[in-house]
Image (tube, rainbow, N blue to C red; front, side, top):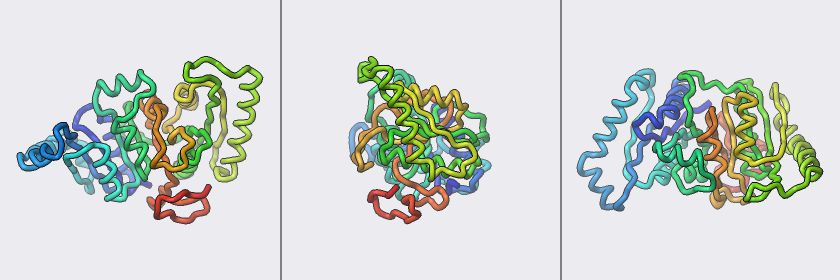
Amino acid sequence: MFKDILLAITPSELCDCAADAAFHFAQRFESKLAIVHVCGMVQGWGEMEFLESSGEVGRIKASVEEYYKDKLRGLSNYEIKVVPGVPHAEVLRLARKMNADLVVMGPHTKEYAELRSRQWGMTGSTLEQVSQKSRCPVMIVAKSTPYGEHKFMNIVAATDFSEQADCAVFYGGQIARHYKAGLTVFHCVEAGGESGRVSLGQDEIKSAIVEAKARLEERYGDKLRGIKDCSFEAWEGMPAMEILKLARMREADLILMAHHTRERDPEKAFLGSTVVQVALNATCPTMSVNRHFDLRCGMMYDQSGEVVTEPREATV
């Protein structure tokens, strides 16, 4: 299923959950695994040259190898890359270079994980940048899953009916078929403004929910037909909270999302707080998918089956 995986890490316990997931997938699918650590630059290009000439890059690479040595024993096709640069730019560059079909990431620091799990609306981190711009799916793993038990039996895909959200839903359909898993497609009706106060009347909310459920069936029903347990849900609330609630109710093993935006061009779309807010609070991995991507062969595609080799719009 996943043939070329990029794991972006810092060699610490903060990334253990993400690393375990990547190691499991690499073992199960006999994938090529690139373990990437980017030395973030403070002083600029001169510092990059210093790191390389001083041998610091080699020392960091050795520490990564040592930290993961026990779990790497079961892998035969892996490479550790330590590169200086801007973290999100290097992760994206290396993912494109190796034609990765999955990027796996976790929180970078304890302070980041704690702060992001509490606050809303913050942007600009490596997680946001990679999730926003990656050409392949990005899995964010922030909580522990028993090692070797990354089995997707209950999947939740959230949609706001944007084209990017369609990518996440249809990719969820592919995974559901592969694992013979159940799939719940969910839309949150936002009944309030930024203040969180309800701005719609109860009759309006009820009508919006009925309309959303009908739209879910119409937009996705035919393309998801054949999945053994596929359902559509909609209710009101704040998107991140309601997605997390549904994931708990369904005992989800995986949440799929995209940018909650109406911007047609995924390169220009601005990633809000919802994806990372869900990812850092969910008890299961969260996957960001912003383009149609065929997990069978690692290609972007449109729903007619035509391969998309350039970043043009895929038809739905």
